Length: 228
Image (cartoon, rainbow, N blue to C red; front, side, top):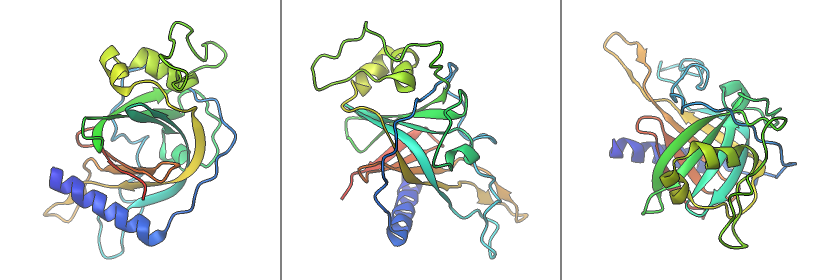
């Protein structure tokens, strides 16, 4: 599994390098919305591209799915949060309505290495009409740290376990929206009958600062490459 992940990361990096990336421009900060519920399965029909929607003419194995995606990002002491569209259609929009249930919050929890860690997913539906943006009961330990607000804040306060919240730490900057390149590399294989068999794949996001996050569906972990 480790060798497979390294091959995925290497291929994705080569593709991003060949295509080139433009510095994404921030837009007006949206209201991020999150819905209560258990962490959903990742490889679902609603959340992934159709495996045969974009295939090479000489092979039935899916080629990488790439689009420009509007995301929201927030850095933490020991991790990162991303808001992404829940469906492929929503994910590949550069502007979002943030209607409850249309997005997901991805939480990247770094381990001791600082180069990989655990990936958590929460269905997004924070309701600005019914729920507070923050909780005054949570006071940051210093002036340079922040309590996350709105949807990210709800996940941080109520969806993470106490151990996970302590591991992630406090936010180190406000949340910010930007447009980035999203990539999905399908897993799976072609069987003896020549049919493509769907298996978990890998999602790639580039942060506003140029860092690359590779999210692995197989074991719900991620790998991280700092910006140059």
